[in-house]
Length: 262
Image 1 (tube, rainbow, N blue to C red):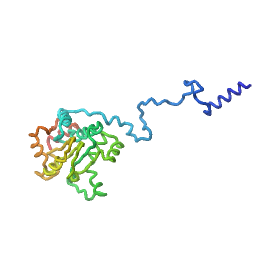
Image 2: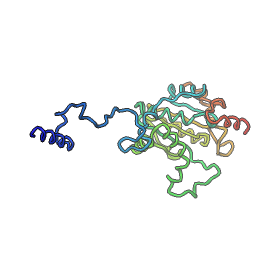
Image 3: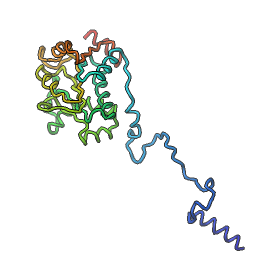
Image 4: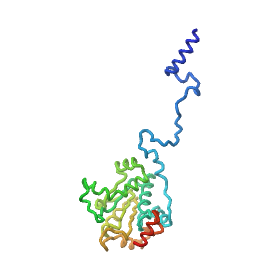
């Protein structure tokens, strides 16, 4: 009878978890799922749905055309690179991808992205909010490229701590950018003097990539300084001027066909 009561008591205590698991055979007691640190489609620790995919954002990009390969090689070798070419050739994407790669590798301490806020037939005056809110749509392409290489959470954290800065061209005057990867986007909308100001911001241990398409300027004819600056830099051996062509377009094939007739 005592043995029977003991067995019943042991069963009840096991159900209630009153005994230490060390008193039992480990293979029989451990019924909790084991975390094998494998991939899970569900967010971990309350993270956002895209945060568990952080590793996929850090993969090294590969060139899809000879022109892109030349541009990537130039960025690796030169401190100042000018990337000229039509829309869809990956100029901005490659530049920002290289910037993120350099930041994650510790080769630079910050990324500075800039582009001119030039009205292309529209007016920013009607947009709601303060000046920062009004300029946000013009800087949106830079945010898009960043979020494609970094998770949104990671990008916001880096911007909050100042490791990533996005600013219009007008806010760059008087600065010296040391230990930075600088990307000047849509440079065809900069005048000659604006480009001169931006290019002379380059500091020690920094890389600057200037991207643009001289054939798609929103400025009045003859005002854009991109083509003139690039022509002068062709003679400077320590500066790389990479000219992409229609064959380097990686968007829909119709883009290359349209640019051929427009």
